[in-house]
Length: 304
Image (cartoon, rainbow, N blue to C red):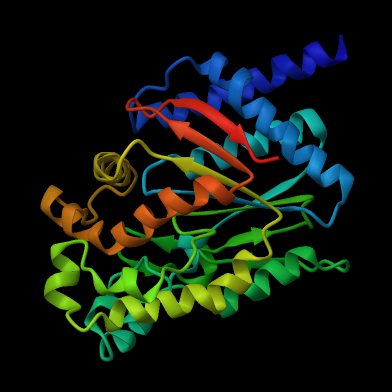
């Protein structure tokens, strides 16, 4: 009876959350089926990992832009809290983008670094210190940053999110979370007009790759359980990024948003690493969730 009540409570909170998401985006398909076939089993895997060793509490959630990382991380948080009494903190690597002023300084070396996104445009020192604080035995309250994409800058500290208690589970999500470096030969071939025109000596690519080999690798090595969302194709990254922009427009009325041509250019900055992850993380992630053309979770595979 107790389990039935829990299940009903989870369903109610899950459906309520989904309904809010649908207001600003596309409809969710087969909601209860998705809950039972994907979200509940994956939350169970996370709980088992944590139960076996409470130090294994950093869950990475990775996938292309617009694949649903933030939504899925919040759904998993609902289940972990209501079913297993496990508290969570959701961290997005997007909130740790360097400020616009910091990226302007980077752009003096290579102007492509003015655009947020690629490894090198995040404040890893701040991120690393916050992960340490979340895992400390003697927990002290602190604030994590918030990045506003509509103004392309970090919000002032008074608008940051306060973390009041030490979580059981840290869900660390982001488009490049878990990304691996490429070989030097791979870097030499331009994959889009952006690279061909503005990175002729591939110095931008080499710097990004070096970051993945060094500072980002140290952060990603802290992840104990990695979930990768596999999109059908890179075209869907563009399509779903358009949807994200519509949501941003709804939530940030009066603020500037990107047009279709801007988004096409914008995702070129992400293209190389996204395509590389589609090849590599399907082999190395603990769980690979395949999405279909309708943005629905189609299947998932567990790495043994």
